[in-house]
Length: 318
Ligand code: F6P
Image 1 (spheres, rainbow, N blue to C red):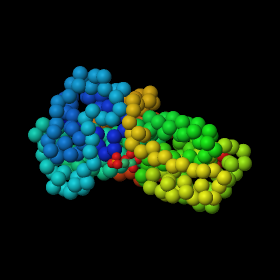
Image 2 (cartoon, rainbow, N blue to C red; image 1 turned 60 degrees about the vertical axis):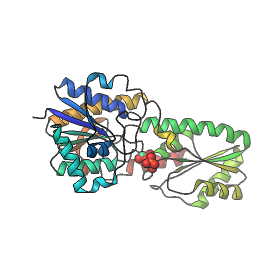
Image 3 (spheres, rainbow, N blue to C red; image 1 turned 180 degrees about the horizontal axis):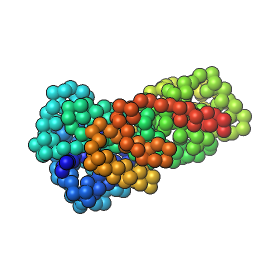
Image 4 (cartoon, protein in one colour; image 1 turned 90 degrees about the horizontal axis):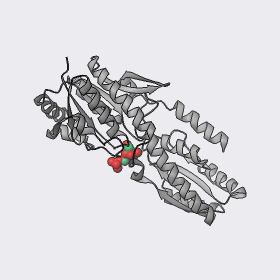
């Protein structure tokens, strides 16, 4: 029977991570478990930076962006000897179960730990929404709302100046932020990996927009094209002068939306229940309106179907 659990946030931070830590901590305490917070993700686990958490430790944290436990990306965690040192640190505290809040890289780390004997339950915390098994990841809703608010502002100035705004959003391996933002702002063009793109078609769409509008919006997912070069190309080949903006890390900050806080709370409780039910290499997924527990390996399988359906709707409505 598990008596002590650890909780950590890992990889890129996401708004709502604090709400998850709060839910895990309080649900565990209600179920008579001791909870230990691990600072800076797997790095803090490796360095033994672990502290006991109480109800009060998570007071006033839910509305704060970022993660108060801190996070890190630790490439060395792929090495077994590094994980062994981290596990030995958990053993010193008699921690017998771990909740990992993060994205796909963090899940891989968790899976590797579970294969070394530590029961792990993952909670999807990433603005990218790039974990195949779940329709939702904590932080996504806040991030897209930030992106949409920024694009709405850029539209104002584009319209005044008769310009095309080209905006790069985050998501290095996933076009979810791009497609959702493009649909929400009624963009002319959305460029992301899942759909691919044709430069001639991009220019054609912007030219069409110039017939009836004073501005055009192009949303580009990170790592697809240089938005600066694309702006030069659009300026040279359409009636619009173009400007590029990289939204960057602003999308990772801010107070979480209601949806992120509520789903974080529900997933946090579910994760503690899963550990107590004996799950050892699992994660919490949101699928078709239900929170379910799934093996991490299964959840990591990519599924672009839903995103491509949304992309088609975006194109249909343009
Ligand atoms: O994983 C979330 C994410 O924000 C990606 O969208 C982005 O590519 C990456 O993290 C940026 O990472 P870092 O903050 O380490 O530069």
